[in-house]
Length: 67
Figure 1 (cartoon, rainbow, N blue to C red):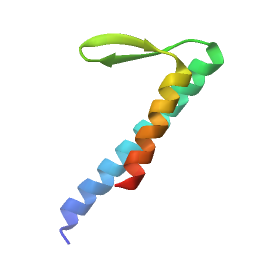
Figure 2 (tube, one colour):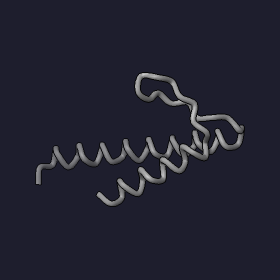
Figure 3 (tube, rainbow, N blue to C red):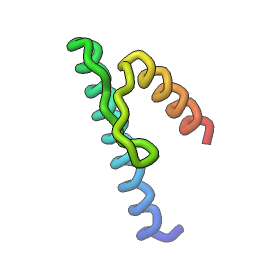
């Protein structure tokens, strides 16, 4: 196995895990403060209710787990 390639995959996995953890914290804070989560999507700023984005994130995690 290519050690450089496995190191890159490991780093990518760690970065992805850190991103997911940060997103969870953002969603939790939005729920606590009853504010929307602000995202950039399709070249526009969108405000999404925390509950709605949480459901979307759970779906994304399920898809990632199946890979």
